[in-house]
Length: 385
Image 1: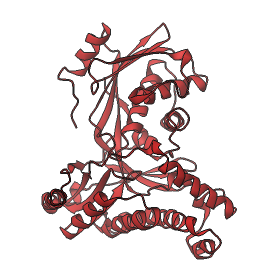
Image 2: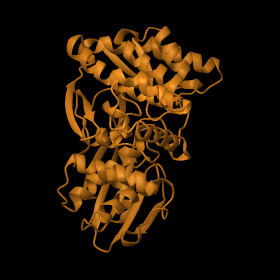
Image 3: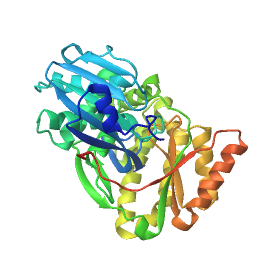
Image 4: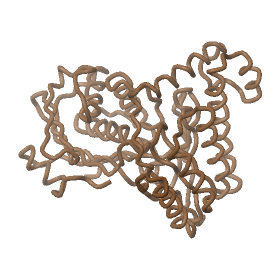
Protein backbone atom coordinates (compact mmCIF):
# COMPACT_ATOMS: atom_id res chain seq x y z
CA UNK A 1 0.00 0.00 0.00
CA UNK A 2 1.51 3.32 -1.00
CA UNK A 3 1.00 6.68 0.71
CA UNK A 4 -1.78 8.74 -0.82
CA UNK A 5 0.18 12.00 -0.90
CA UNK A 6 2.22 12.68 -4.08
CA UNK A 7 4.33 15.23 -2.17
CA UNK A 8 7.41 13.93 -0.32
CA UNK A 9 6.52 13.75 3.39
CA UNK A 10 9.19 16.21 4.48
CA UNK A 11 7.86 18.78 2.02
CA UNK A 12 4.29 17.98 3.00
CA UNK A 13 5.24 18.57 6.65
CA UNK A 14 6.61 22.00 5.83
CA UNK A 15 3.52 22.87 3.78
CA UNK A 16 1.23 21.85 6.63
CA UNK A 17 3.08 23.34 9.57
CA UNK A 18 5.20 26.13 8.15
CA UNK A 19 8.56 24.77 9.28
CA UNK A 20 10.80 21.75 8.68
CA UNK A 21 10.70 18.67 10.91
CA UNK A 22 13.43 18.18 13.50
CA UNK A 23 13.81 14.57 12.45
CA UNK A 24 12.26 11.40 11.08
CA UNK A 25 11.59 8.29 13.14
CA UNK A 26 10.45 4.89 11.88
CA UNK A 27 8.84 1.80 13.43
CA UNK A 28 8.11 -1.33 11.37
CA UNK A 29 5.18 -3.65 11.02
CA UNK A 30 5.73 -7.30 11.83
CA UNK A 31 4.81 -10.85 11.02
CA UNK A 32 4.87 -13.52 13.66
CA UNK A 33 6.51 -16.76 12.60
CA UNK A 34 4.83 -18.69 15.41
CA UNK A 35 3.32 -17.98 18.82
CA UNK A 36 -0.18 -16.58 18.18
CA UNK A 37 -2.40 -15.41 21.05
CA UNK A 38 0.26 -16.50 23.53
CA UNK A 39 1.50 -13.04 24.52
CA UNK A 40 -1.45 -12.10 26.74
CA UNK A 41 -1.06 -15.51 28.36
CA UNK A 42 2.55 -14.73 29.43
CA UNK A 43 3.83 -17.10 26.77
CA UNK A 44 6.44 -17.18 24.01
CA UNK A 45 6.46 -15.58 20.56
CA UNK A 46 8.83 -15.44 17.58
CA UNK A 47 8.17 -12.38 15.39
CA UNK A 48 10.21 -10.63 12.72
CA UNK A 49 10.00 -6.98 11.71
CA UNK A 50 9.06 -6.08 8.15
CA UNK A 51 10.66 -3.57 5.78
CA UNK A 52 7.32 -1.73 5.74
CA UNK A 53 7.16 0.93 8.45
CA UNK A 54 5.35 3.95 9.85
CA UNK A 55 7.48 7.10 9.70
CA UNK A 56 6.92 10.10 11.92
CA UNK A 57 8.14 13.51 10.74
CA UNK A 58 8.05 15.66 13.85
CA UNK A 59 8.98 18.89 15.59
CA UNK A 60 8.49 19.96 19.20
CA UNK A 61 6.03 22.66 20.16
CA UNK A 62 6.29 24.85 23.25
CA UNK A 63 2.57 25.56 23.68
CA UNK A 64 1.24 22.13 24.70
CA UNK A 65 -0.57 21.61 21.40
CA UNK A 66 -0.37 18.28 19.54
CA UNK A 67 -1.04 18.52 15.82
CA UNK A 68 -1.39 15.28 13.90
CA UNK A 69 -1.59 14.63 10.17
CA UNK A 70 -1.24 11.60 7.94
CA UNK A 71 -0.30 11.22 4.30
CA UNK A 72 -3.19 8.76 4.06
CA UNK A 73 -5.65 11.52 4.96
CA UNK A 74 -4.43 14.46 2.86
CA UNK A 75 -5.33 17.91 4.13
CA UNK A 76 -6.63 16.81 7.55
CA UNK A 77 -4.88 18.11 10.66
CA UNK A 78 -6.14 17.00 14.07
CA UNK A 79 -5.28 19.55 16.76
CA UNK A 80 -5.35 18.46 20.41
CA UNK A 81 -4.45 19.89 23.81
CA UNK A 82 -1.90 17.55 25.39
CA UNK A 83 -3.06 18.41 28.91
CA UNK A 84 -6.66 17.62 27.98
CA UNK A 85 -6.09 14.19 26.42
CA UNK A 86 -8.29 11.46 27.90
CA UNK A 87 -9.52 8.02 26.85
CA UNK A 88 -12.60 8.35 24.68
CA UNK A 89 -11.75 11.90 23.71
CA UNK A 90 -10.13 11.17 20.33
CA UNK A 91 -11.61 9.03 17.57
CA UNK A 92 -10.37 7.51 14.34
CA UNK A 93 -6.74 7.10 13.34
CA UNK A 94 -5.58 10.00 15.52
CA UNK A 95 -6.51 8.06 18.66
CA UNK A 96 -3.40 5.90 18.33
CA UNK A 97 -0.73 8.64 18.34
CA UNK A 98 -2.74 10.66 20.89
CA UNK A 99 -2.87 7.57 23.11
CA UNK A 100 0.92 7.37 23.24
CA UNK A 101 1.25 11.02 24.25
CA UNK A 102 -1.44 10.56 26.92
CA UNK A 103 0.32 7.47 28.27
CA UNK A 104 3.67 9.22 28.54
CA UNK A 105 2.06 12.13 30.37
CA UNK A 106 0.15 9.78 32.69
CA UNK A 107 3.45 8.09 33.53
CA UNK A 108 4.81 11.42 34.76
CA UNK A 109 7.10 12.32 31.90
CA UNK A 110 7.56 16.03 31.29
CA UNK A 111 6.36 16.23 27.72
CA UNK A 112 4.63 18.90 25.70
CA UNK A 113 3.24 19.27 22.22
CA UNK A 114 4.52 18.44 18.77
CA UNK A 115 3.73 18.74 15.11
CA UNK A 116 3.69 15.25 13.60
CA UNK A 117 3.10 13.98 10.08
CA UNK A 118 2.73 10.21 9.75
CA UNK A 119 3.60 8.32 6.58
CA UNK A 120 3.09 4.56 6.33
CA UNK A 121 3.46 1.70 3.91
CA UNK A 122 2.32 -0.90 6.48
CA UNK A 123 -1.02 -2.24 5.21
CA UNK A 124 -3.80 -1.47 7.66
CA UNK A 125 -6.13 -4.23 8.84
CA UNK A 126 -3.88 -6.93 7.40
CA UNK A 127 -2.66 -8.47 10.65
CA UNK A 128 0.77 -6.88 10.22
CA UNK A 129 0.58 -4.64 13.31
CA UNK A 130 0.03 -1.31 11.61
CA UNK A 131 -1.42 0.09 14.85
CA UNK A 132 1.57 -1.03 16.93
CA UNK A 133 3.95 0.43 14.34
CA UNK A 134 2.08 3.73 14.56
CA UNK A 135 2.23 3.73 18.35
CA UNK A 136 5.91 2.82 18.43
CA UNK A 137 6.82 5.46 15.85
CA UNK A 138 5.24 8.14 18.03
CA UNK A 139 6.77 6.67 21.20
CA UNK A 140 10.32 6.73 19.84
CA UNK A 141 9.71 10.21 18.41
CA UNK A 142 8.65 11.61 21.76
CA UNK A 143 11.46 9.73 23.49
CA UNK A 144 13.98 11.63 21.37
CA UNK A 145 12.20 14.98 21.13
CA UNK A 146 11.87 15.24 24.91
CA UNK A 147 15.03 13.31 25.82
CA UNK A 148 13.14 10.82 28.00
CA UNK A 149 15.87 8.17 27.92
CA UNK A 150 13.48 5.23 27.78
CA UNK A 151 14.73 1.85 26.54
CA UNK A 152 13.01 -0.23 23.87
CA UNK A 153 11.10 -2.44 26.32
CA UNK A 154 9.87 0.60 28.25
CA UNK A 155 8.65 2.24 25.05
CA UNK A 156 6.92 -0.99 24.04
CA UNK A 157 5.08 -0.99 27.37
CA UNK A 158 4.05 2.62 26.77
CA UNK A 159 2.67 1.68 23.35
CA UNK A 160 0.86 -1.35 24.75
CA UNK A 161 -0.75 0.67 27.55
CA UNK A 162 -1.79 3.27 24.98
CA UNK A 163 -3.68 0.62 23.02
CA UNK A 164 -5.10 -1.08 26.12
CA UNK A 165 -6.22 1.93 28.16
CA UNK A 166 -6.81 4.68 25.60
CA UNK A 167 -7.84 2.89 22.40
CA UNK A 168 -9.54 0.04 24.25
CA UNK A 169 -7.96 -3.06 22.69
CA UNK A 170 -6.64 -5.49 25.37
CA UNK A 171 -3.66 -6.60 23.26
CA UNK A 172 -0.57 -8.31 24.57
CA UNK A 173 2.95 -6.93 24.27
CA UNK A 174 4.26 -8.88 21.26
CA UNK A 175 3.42 -6.41 18.50
CA UNK A 176 4.95 -3.44 20.29
CA UNK A 177 8.08 -5.35 21.30
CA UNK A 178 8.50 -6.64 17.75
CA UNK A 179 8.22 -3.14 16.32
CA UNK A 180 10.59 -1.64 18.89
CA UNK A 181 13.18 -4.36 19.31
CA UNK A 182 13.47 -6.71 16.32
CA UNK A 183 16.78 -6.85 14.47
CA UNK A 184 17.71 -7.15 10.81
CA UNK A 185 18.32 -10.72 9.70
CA UNK A 186 16.88 -12.18 12.88
CA UNK A 187 13.70 -13.33 14.59
CA UNK A 188 13.01 -12.20 18.14
CA UNK A 189 12.40 -14.97 20.65
CA UNK A 190 10.47 -13.18 23.37
CA UNK A 191 9.29 -14.34 26.76
CA UNK A 192 6.32 -12.04 27.22
CA UNK A 193 6.24 -12.53 30.99
CA UNK A 194 9.54 -10.82 31.74
CA UNK A 195 10.33 -9.45 28.24
CA UNK A 196 13.62 -11.31 28.10
CA UNK A 197 14.56 -11.58 24.45
CA UNK A 198 17.00 -13.46 22.27
CA UNK A 199 17.90 -12.69 18.66
CA UNK A 200 17.73 -15.81 16.50
CA UNK A 201 19.57 -15.68 13.14
CA UNK A 202 17.11 -16.14 10.27
CA UNK A 203 18.86 -16.03 6.91
CA UNK A 204 15.98 -17.09 4.69
CA UNK A 205 17.61 -15.97 1.45
CA UNK A 206 20.81 -17.82 2.31
CA UNK A 207 18.78 -20.98 2.79
CA UNK A 208 17.08 -20.51 -0.59
CA UNK A 209 13.78 -19.65 1.07
CA UNK A 210 11.17 -16.93 0.78
CA UNK A 211 8.54 -16.01 3.34
CA UNK A 212 5.49 -14.78 1.48
CA UNK A 213 2.89 -12.56 3.14
CA UNK A 214 -0.50 -13.05 1.53
CA UNK A 215 -2.79 -10.23 2.61
CA UNK A 216 -6.31 -11.59 2.12
CA UNK A 217 -7.67 -8.02 2.19
CA UNK A 218 -10.28 -9.12 4.72
CA UNK A 219 -10.20 -6.24 7.18
CA UNK A 220 -10.17 -7.16 10.84
CA UNK A 221 -11.06 -4.88 13.73
CA UNK A 222 -9.71 -6.08 17.04
CA UNK A 223 -11.73 -3.44 18.89
CA UNK A 224 -14.99 -5.22 18.02
CA UNK A 225 -14.99 -7.39 21.14
CA UNK A 226 -13.95 -10.77 19.70
CA UNK A 227 -10.32 -10.35 20.75
CA UNK A 228 -11.35 -9.20 24.22
CA UNK A 229 -13.62 -12.22 24.59
CA UNK A 230 -10.76 -14.60 23.75
CA UNK A 231 -8.48 -12.97 26.28
CA UNK A 232 -11.18 -13.03 28.94
CA UNK A 233 -11.74 -16.74 28.28
CA UNK A 234 -8.05 -17.50 28.73
CA UNK A 235 -7.89 -15.52 31.96
CA UNK A 236 -10.98 -17.30 33.27
CA UNK A 237 -9.45 -20.68 32.45
CA UNK A 238 -6.20 -19.81 34.23
CA UNK A 239 -8.15 -18.72 37.31
CA UNK A 240 -10.18 -21.94 37.35
CA UNK A 241 -6.94 -23.93 37.15
CA UNK A 242 -5.33 -21.87 39.92
CA UNK A 243 -2.56 -20.61 37.63
CA UNK A 244 -1.13 -17.09 37.20
CA UNK A 245 -1.49 -17.53 33.42
CA UNK A 246 -1.93 -20.32 30.91
CA UNK A 247 1.80 -20.17 30.23
CA UNK A 248 2.18 -21.99 33.57
CA UNK A 249 0.28 -25.07 32.38
CA UNK A 250 2.80 -27.72 31.34
CA UNK A 251 2.09 -29.75 28.23
CA UNK A 252 2.19 -33.00 30.24
CA UNK A 253 -0.55 -31.64 32.51
CA UNK A 254 -2.80 -30.50 29.67
CA UNK A 255 -5.10 -33.55 29.41
CA UNK A 256 -5.93 -33.52 33.13
CA UNK A 257 -6.42 -29.76 33.10
CA UNK A 258 -8.84 -29.92 30.18
CA UNK A 259 -10.98 -32.39 32.11
CA UNK A 260 -11.45 -29.75 34.82
CA UNK A 261 -12.65 -26.97 32.53
CA UNK A 262 -16.02 -26.02 31.04
CA UNK A 263 -16.35 -27.21 27.46
CA UNK A 264 -16.19 -23.71 25.96
CA UNK A 265 -12.74 -23.08 27.49
CA UNK A 266 -11.14 -26.36 26.47
CA UNK A 267 -10.16 -25.39 22.90
CA UNK A 268 -8.73 -22.03 24.02
CA UNK A 269 -6.46 -23.67 26.57
CA UNK A 270 -5.43 -26.43 24.18
CA UNK A 271 -4.37 -23.87 21.59
CA UNK A 272 -2.34 -21.73 23.98
CA UNK A 273 -0.44 -24.65 25.50
CA UNK A 274 0.28 -26.35 22.18
CA UNK A 275 1.21 -23.03 20.56
CA UNK A 276 3.80 -22.34 23.25
CA UNK A 277 5.13 -25.80 22.47
CA UNK A 278 5.32 -24.92 18.78
CA UNK A 279 7.45 -21.86 19.55
CA UNK A 280 9.93 -23.99 21.45
CA UNK A 281 9.82 -26.66 18.72
CA UNK A 282 10.62 -23.95 16.18
CA UNK A 283 13.63 -22.86 18.20
CA UNK A 284 14.93 -26.44 18.25
CA UNK A 285 14.38 -26.90 14.54
CA UNK A 286 16.15 -23.65 13.68
CA UNK A 287 19.15 -24.68 15.77
CA UNK A 288 19.35 -28.24 14.48
CA UNK A 289 18.02 -28.21 10.92
CA UNK A 290 17.54 -24.61 9.76
CA UNK A 291 14.48 -22.71 8.57
CA UNK A 292 13.49 -25.14 5.79
CA UNK A 293 12.27 -27.54 8.48
CA UNK A 294 9.67 -25.12 9.88
CA UNK A 295 6.89 -25.73 7.35
CA UNK A 296 4.92 -28.43 9.21
CA UNK A 297 5.01 -26.39 12.43
CA UNK A 298 3.48 -23.39 10.67
CA UNK A 299 0.71 -25.49 9.14
CA UNK A 300 -0.03 -27.17 12.48
CA UNK A 301 -0.25 -23.72 14.07
CA UNK A 302 -2.86 -22.70 11.53
CA UNK A 303 -4.93 -25.81 12.18
CA UNK A 304 -4.94 -24.93 15.88
CA UNK A 305 -6.03 -21.35 15.17
CA UNK A 306 -8.73 -22.61 12.83
CA UNK A 307 -10.12 -25.51 14.85
CA UNK A 308 -9.45 -24.56 18.49
CA UNK A 309 -9.10 -20.79 18.67
CA UNK A 310 -11.48 -20.17 15.78
CA UNK A 311 -9.85 -16.93 14.66
CA UNK A 312 -9.50 -17.97 11.04
CA UNK A 313 -11.94 -17.31 8.21
CA UNK A 314 -12.66 -18.83 4.77
CA UNK A 315 -10.14 -16.56 3.04
CA UNK A 316 -7.22 -17.38 5.33
CA UNK A 317 -8.11 -21.08 5.31
CA UNK A 318 -8.15 -21.13 1.51
CA UNK A 319 -4.85 -19.26 1.28
CA UNK A 320 -3.17 -21.79 3.58
CA UNK A 321 -4.53 -24.89 1.88
CA UNK A 322 -3.81 -23.67 -1.65
CA UNK A 323 -0.31 -22.45 -0.73
CA UNK A 324 0.63 -25.84 0.72
CA UNK A 325 -0.89 -27.71 -2.21
CA UNK A 326 1.02 -25.45 -4.62
CA UNK A 327 4.36 -26.27 -3.01
CA UNK A 328 4.77 -24.12 0.09
CA UNK A 329 6.67 -25.88 2.87
CA UNK A 330 4.06 -24.63 5.32
CA UNK A 331 1.63 -21.78 5.85
CA UNK A 332 -0.51 -20.22 8.54
CA UNK A 333 -2.55 -17.19 9.45
CA UNK A 334 -0.54 -14.52 11.26
CA UNK A 335 -1.83 -11.81 13.56
CA UNK A 336 -4.93 -11.47 15.69
CA UNK A 337 -7.19 -13.17 13.19
CA UNK A 338 -10.67 -12.71 11.74
CA UNK A 339 -9.03 -11.92 8.40
CA UNK A 340 -5.67 -10.33 7.77
CA UNK A 341 -2.67 -12.13 6.34
CA UNK A 342 -1.25 -15.59 5.83
CA UNK A 343 2.47 -16.37 5.77
CA UNK A 344 3.75 -19.10 3.48
CA UNK A 345 7.29 -20.46 3.69
CA UNK A 346 8.45 -21.50 0.24
CA UNK A 347 11.53 -22.42 -1.67
CA UNK A 348 12.46 -19.22 -3.46
CA UNK A 349 12.10 -21.01 -6.80
CA UNK A 350 8.48 -21.84 -5.90
CA UNK A 351 7.42 -18.47 -4.47
CA UNK A 352 5.90 -17.00 -7.62
CA UNK A 353 3.97 -20.19 -8.36
CA UNK A 354 2.55 -20.31 -4.83
CA UNK A 355 1.49 -16.66 -4.99
CA UNK A 356 -0.08 -17.24 -8.41
CA UNK A 357 -2.01 -20.29 -7.22
CA UNK A 358 -3.45 -18.45 -4.21
CA UNK A 359 -4.38 -15.47 -6.37
CA UNK A 360 -6.15 -17.66 -8.90
CA UNK A 361 -8.03 -19.49 -6.14
CA UNK A 362 -9.25 -16.20 -4.70
CA UNK A 363 -10.42 -14.96 -8.08
CA UNK A 364 -12.21 -18.26 -8.69
CA UNK A 365 -14.17 -17.65 -5.48
CA UNK A 366 -15.09 -14.16 -6.64
CA UNK A 367 -12.83 -12.56 -4.04
CA UNK A 368 -10.38 -9.70 -4.56
CA UNK A 369 -6.86 -10.83 -5.36
CA UNK A 370 -4.62 -10.90 -2.28
CA UNK A 371 -1.80 -8.44 -1.92
CA UNK A 372 1.51 -10.33 -1.89
CA UNK A 373 4.69 -9.24 -0.12
CA UNK A 374 8.02 -10.87 0.60
CA UNK A 375 8.90 -10.69 4.28
CA UNK A 376 12.54 -9.86 4.94
CA UNK A 377 13.61 -9.83 8.62
CA UNK A 378 14.29 -6.13 9.20
CA UNK A 379 15.36 -3.62 11.83
CA UNK A 380 13.13 -2.37 14.63
CA UNK A 381 12.29 1.22 15.54
CA UNK A 382 15.00 3.82 14.87
CA UNK A 383 15.69 7.44 14.09
CA UNK A 384 16.32 7.87 10.37
CA UNK A 385 17.38 11.50 10.23
